[in-house]
Length: 218
Figure: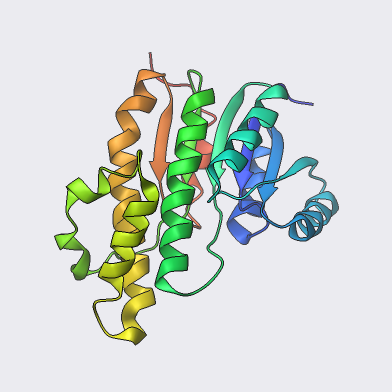
């Protein structure tokens, strides 16, 4: 078994499975999802493709659940890569924003806590096109994410629901992308201070996964 570890949240979706297959070439893969049943099906798919992986049930929207996941993965070896590919369960603005905001904050914090030089975190949940309505989001609101992410979810949900009901889910996705872009940029310095890297990409953009094999420049 490779000594280094790669963690994939939302490992049962297309992006998670593709990431797991790629990362398994160099790392021991820990696949995570909030559903044990989905994990069993995903492991069967990987096994049929000749890929071995460990599975751990964890909900990215639950801080302690993510911390437990990272702690367990760290016991298997140093964490080289984390791919956060967890989708959002539900279609209401509140469900969309809660899944994206809490998942982003929790996975980022838990990864930073175990990061070593060379560790790479890839948020592969970015939706294309934030939309023009997000330009007015106060950055002071987003800045509360690390200390009170639930308040950020509530405030962004209210913004998403200001417009027509039929557009609210689309606006919520746009606000989620705005939040992810801002938070990734906000936290990048903390990762660089550890000699680590942080990326925010679209769900099918796996280039940073391949690049995570490359050592950081000294």
